[in-house]
Length: 369
Image 1 (cartoon, helix red, strand yellow):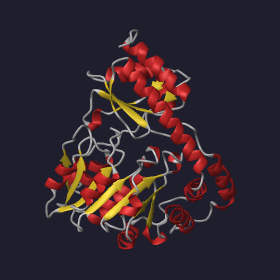
Image 2 (spheres, one colour):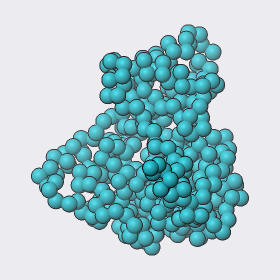
Image 3 (cartoon, one colour):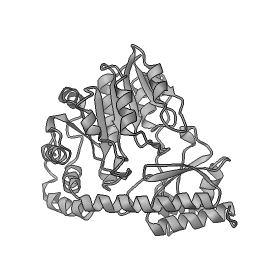
Image 4 (cartoon, rainbow, N blue to C red):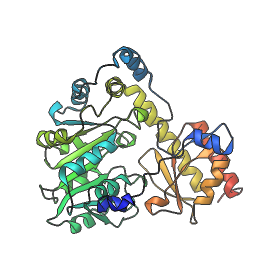
């Protein structure tokens, strides 16, 4: 029996999501140590102390189910960002929320719009529900908003836009998004995925929650995996108008956020000092990556995220493999249709130094350009 014949049509075309290689796997494969992982856009400062203390206080209560409604976390988010608790939906990471949006608002035959070179989960959730994927060709590696508008039809149910975009790092300004949203029909749900918003400079950051007052079809999705350092606990949140939040919470699985994730998220929500430390390191180290690429004549895509994507003008797989042997894990993105590129997460200075040294060795970059 071939059970692929039993699966729905959309699932048949899917491949499993390929995560960044774990450090432990590379240790097993090559028997090396002193490995740095710059593959999964994780927080290089580790788990925040505020979350550790919150977890310690929660350990004696793990025989109880978590708060299914996440009351305290919603209150903390609402207070921090000036929204209402009934606008908030909690997710087991923002990936959980992306799947939730698709299940709630689209189905077989409906159209979902997203960009070429956008987060790979968008096509994954679209095809899993047997919806029609409309991938819009990228413009300078980023979102072609006019192309999105041209693709709209009476079957369009969802639009996904990541800002900053993963894996390219492209960024749309608030004015660009505002103008775009004025042209999106109110019956089309627009998802603004802001998993990396904390890495944008405060002077340019989109005030996305203010846009909710103008556009009732907007959902803003955020993650606590990156700047907040909670990737291993899987926690994210979405803010929308209360009617949309009510629909999402009807579909959301009960207890989708575990107790340790909830209590950690509450603790870090107001840990502004930790988040700013992370963002400042990212700003300074991003400048070093850009300078390195310019010094050695490497093309890169300017990024507003906590990663940079380098174009090697040749298949990047051998470069990736050679870096592994130097104890450096980065992210190949051929699965995004970018076989000549590698995406490198911005780490701590010493981690980035190891990458620079390894890449110079692998590419024999002895001479400055």
